Image 1 (tube, helix red, strand yellow):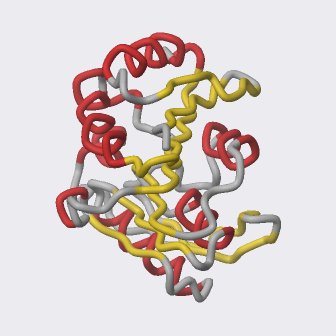
Image 2: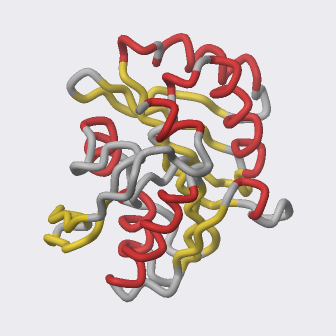
Amino acid sequence: MMSDHYFSAQPGSSHKRRELRVVLAGQERLLETDSGIFSPDGVDKGTAVLLAGAPAPAEAGNLLDIGCGWGPIALSLALHSPNATVYAVDVNERSLGLTADNAAALGLANLRTGLPEQIDATLQFQTIWSNPPIRVGKEVLHGILHTWLPRLAPDGSAYLVVQKNLGSDSLQRWLAETFPELEVARHSTAKSFRILQVHRPA
């Protein structure tokens, strides 16, 4: 299952689409979920911490969700910032399809989905929110962060939620050492998670 929702462009498990009722941006939403993706039964604990604890995203410009799953972060960004363009990125095409369908169900015309290589490489992002796939291992995780964090716009910020026992503090140190041009800090701690902030000075 882990290989399905983290690594597979086309998950091997058969489709099991079903309705999902969740609260996003303060209201109950009727969406769809499927097998072969991350957290198919609802908003996972880390994402819930991020959605509750991150400051409001930029109201305009480009916003990014790295590893969108069925879409809770990207949909929340799009609901909160209707004048922004939200990019939902995942390697799992089933996840991308779900996020696109859920955005359409909510009437969110400001959300775009794509594989990492399909996103315009010249785009910069005012806000990045992510519950990054820690369990893929450091090499893959570091590659993901190397791809996206340098694309923060001036005065842009990324908020990453990481479980403490999965290495949030060591990841914070690695971020600070790897991206000296960016400001790295612990934004908050809730339950067993930390939210890390990565900011590009204006």
